[in-house]
Length: 130
Image (cartoon, rainbow, N blue to C red; front, side):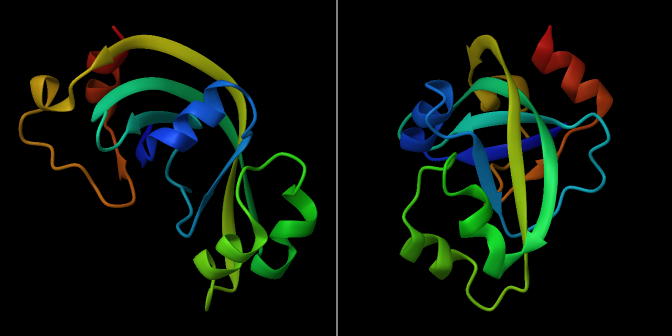
């Protein structure tokens, strides 16, 4: 499972299914279960939901044309985000799962909220999902 900080406005768009993809610069090839824990960043600062995804590694120049129907970001922002990147990582959201909102500090006091993402161990995943 990956732990992914996402801005609250994008979390809300994912939960309403207006946004069906998450764009990242990093691939998640070590994440065999294809689960993503959504951490709603400032000002919410809580784990809110998780989702199952499919991964697409695609040429950055092709992202707009392939995903324009199911994203929630303007082309200029996307181009800027992937500037100087040859390949893009696209998480295609397949299923959403509700969990009780949790404060990460209460569960894992040692965990620093990552800028981009981090992998969670099987043990950490069990703690979160129980």
